[in-house]
Length: 369
Image 1 (tube, rainbow, N blue to C red):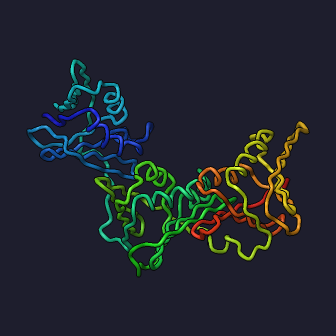
Image 2: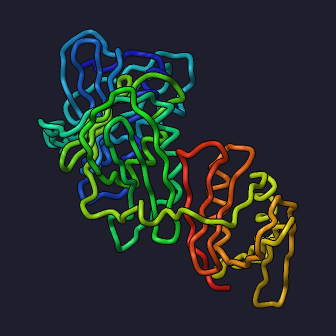
Image 3: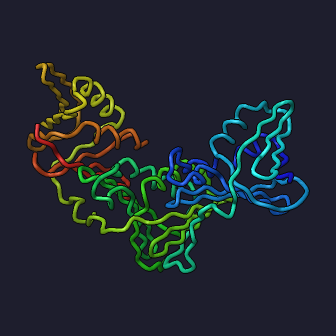
């Protein structure tokens, strides 16, 4: 059966869209495959890891019968990328074999039955639905994703909290040592309050797929599932169960020690000082005194780095330690010219914000040095 007849890049685009979640090693061999379904000239592509499912479609079909099959996602991508751009790609299926042809190149791939592919059942009822531009959702994820935990035993930290309330959407991520918060206003108002935790893998996949456009993303939230639709793409993901920490209590307010500093200058200073830190101990000491912010590090070999920045500060002196990576992460992801640093004392968390923009907040716990 003739399945696909199109240019190489036309086939690669939808295939690459869904294949990002395919696991190289899985207890179910069929999950290494992509599900292809042909209806007329429309071919749909679907990949799943049981927790997340991504599907898209494109007009690639050859004339002939409709049908469905599955074949190795990685092998198919590798084959297509290795083919020259010019010749038309033809994919046909006969029995348990798929044949990929282009010019004088010909490949034969094993297939598995489409009926055996475990698709994710999409919820029939969603408690909340809203839409926002792709670039706005991408911005929200970009501002907090780096603070998500990785493989933490507190599984509810291995993801991102999505909160809808009235006409606002908030995203929060924390690993227990630092917390990133960002919010945005929705065009629609009157949304019921909902709080769900989106898995880390889903967040990273969304960052890969979302474009910097004003095209809308429709987000549907159910009790145990979230569905996002944009363009020809539909992503369905299970949610993380558990109670996310109360982020409102974590974000400090009323600090009196504050200074504004150039983001790139601070990032460069931290980068220089971090040269003498070790993988086991990433501590950096910030000393704030009138007119000066001093960045200091030392290591077990009695080596030391000191870097100074001129700042507009006339308050009481303060000395406080941090994991330098936590500061570098936020400065790398921000694109603003300046950042505002606010402190309580040497034992309380610091607050990093953007001057003139109250939509973003970053809280980092101090460390003993």
